[in-house]
Image 1 (spheres, rainbow, N blue to C red):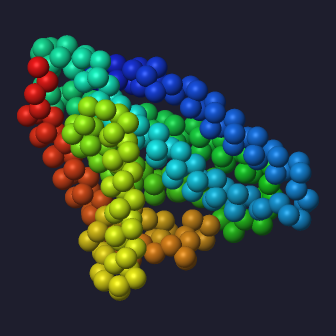
Image 2: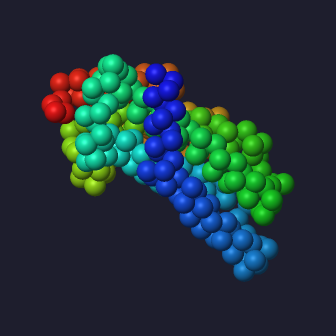
Length: 257
């Protein structure tokens, strides 16, 4: 299993052009950060705490999440597209191990990206902007923010596995993923407006930051499930498990001849 995961990580590095992803995302981030520092007046500059929070919310919640979905879905769909899934199937390895290695390698890849990217975000925030007014330790804040977001990544990666086993096109799988995600968020928003109980829906429970005591992380305007951290983690676990089981069952029964 470990050799499968290692091979999948290598394929991810080359297939998904991880190096170029990091260069482009971090390059644009550094250009923006230095531009703000150079061209804005001292009084107009955001404090380090606000810049850190906005950076993590935008990059972690948009770029890294989107890239994680692409990594996981393409790990599955590319095998069908290139026909290499047949070579994997004839090896003395169970399909469970094949798909499991793709899910685990996707998680490890995105975890490593989170660490690298957020170290850069933290260093830029404290070196270029005023950290003296921060009400919380910014390093602890950055680390906690990442921890709160990891269960969300697990759910989305499991959803990616299910969609990846249903479609043999990476483009279709990624587009469908975002259609489902957007529709789910819209339905949850409508139910909130109707004052219906959404505690058992997945999307409000993904907002684990609402349970934090950290003043920088906790955002009063964001509405989570409100039932407690353990409750939300349980909901995420159950939804992720169901999606993974369906995806693994589909892959087990799939005709790859």
